[in-house]
Length: 386
Image 1 (cartoon, rainbow, N blue to C red):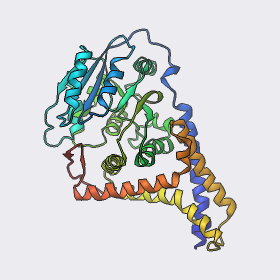
Image 2 (image 1 turned 180 degrees about the horizontal axis):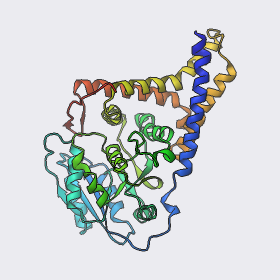
Image 3 (image 1 turned 45 degrees about the vertical axis):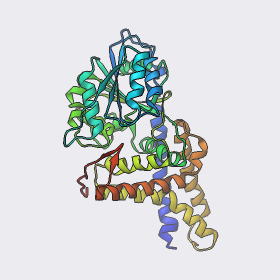
Image 4 (image 1 turned 30 degrees about the vertical axis):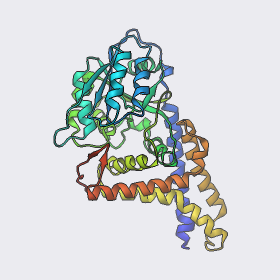
């Protein structure tokens, strides 16, 4: 094998991973939990807004957790987004148990709108709160969650508070795919820099919990301004950042949990929908990033195997051990802090391979116009090189 591949490139990987490790550690220092904030002197009205389409497996537990908040002044509004499963029936039963629960029926999204963006826009129009909390129908909030999240928002005086809930994973597809997006944000978006610069690339948000000041949400156009953008949480975070508004990311693993997907097939479908979209359909950037990540975490292992069989004489066992050790450290620290099983960090090569497959699938399905979600076909995106 080439000496560059077995020596020079490995040294480059070591340097790059050292930088990533610094980013991870600095992010963990900045990622405060809402429990660190004292209770505010007043409690503004919060509208908790939940779009629900075909969520029969999760909606009851979600709504029950939201209605059980110990916050003194809030409303919960659920929009049934034309579900064709038992979601409407379950919501009707929940409304009997919780008379203050507000349920609205969504209309068909107009041309040029992704279903979730249109649903969230309708929810915002029905909300009365000074603060708008958007969450998903597969989340579960502890009773103290809202009080503590609002305390963090008031303490930071932030236009947007978002954060990392604890991700519940069941199937192997979920275990290999779901942790990856939180891991990537933690590793490659330095918050100390992102909080200071208006660069939209340094934006981060998780749609499972986004708490907006109503005035800020309206100032950036809300979900109505997103149209057919698929990754709405990142798009909203970019608009908040571009508007010069203050935003903060919190660690929410002890307050909010979420099971994003129900099985491996749904996980692959979800990531196929999102991965290319996260890059704003910039083909050159997308290909470069996934090639680099694949090489970064898989090539040293291949070189180690080649060295063991005398096919890579220029390779150094010391350099390879340091490189692979840094990989393990980055994945393990991130996974432990994000609430995932430490054993999942040990199989990071399988995680990387699974996400490479999902990335290729996302690219092919986008080009062929085969993307859909929850029974709705998505518009074929317009891609560009950079």
